[in-house]
Length: 277
Ligand SMILES: CC(C)(COP(=O)(O)OP(=O)(O)OC[C@H]1O[C@@H](n2cnc3c(N)ncnc32)[C@H](O)[C@@H]1OP(=O)(O)O)[C@@H](O)C(=O)NCCC(=O)NCCS
Image (tube, rainbow, N blue to C red):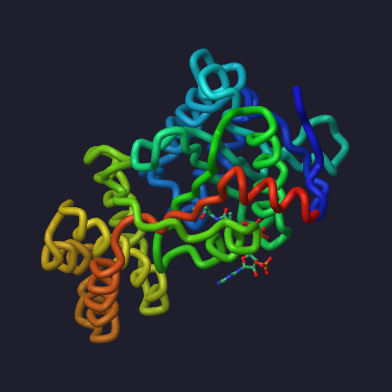
């Protein structure tokens, strides 16, 4: 089975398998800064483990009925084996799958990298490597990626650098059930619970934007989003004018920017890139 090294970081990429479940839970889902864009509630160790098992079931090469058997592509592990101890550590993952919110025949890709490894071109390099694999090994006519508007400028920078173009907005509710959207909300409220000081304003802003985005899709009202958030803050923070303003502004910004910002690379775009390389 295909495996390769990424050009800038030298990390190893191979299909994800059952050995990687622990790494998914402990390197990726346990860090709220990584997990906050991944549409799960991973606020407890048990949930982190359950999500890791779910990702393996959905995309592991040794999981029965995973995307590998239906789409000929699934999820990949990105491993650091530089310690040379024969025990590579999972430091990232990139997956490919279907998304009911995207056109028929479209493949979605998603990625998560452990925080100490950010900024080493791992996302971009793994996308390029595995998009080549996708288009050479499957019939897919385009690869798409969904990004939370206002909340993930890093990820947008990566897509643009790779030649993806903005395709449009996709409601989160066309990709995910109401139950899954409630998990997203629960996780955001858990993030708000942990804000102890006024310097948590950036987190509060992100949470407020996300709740505003969910309000625009009918998960709750705008007013309700503000009240839910205020209720999560300690009385001292709740009565801090700057915090109250952050909540109101964030919810309003999110409400005006709903749905995924969806980027696309077509097979034709890819062929042109390969020819010009
Ligand atoms: C988003 C993520 C995948 C990026 O991974 P990475 O390996 O650090 O990405 P790369 O090193 O390939 O590229 C990072 C790019 O972001 C840019 N960047 C970094 N911080 C930025 C910011 N605040 N605003 C805009 N761009 C930023 C860098 O300049 C770089 O672009 P460049 O190479 O054109 O200069 C990683 O941060 C992550 O795992 N985040 C959590 C999970 C996630 O958000 N997944 C994507 C879901 S859509």
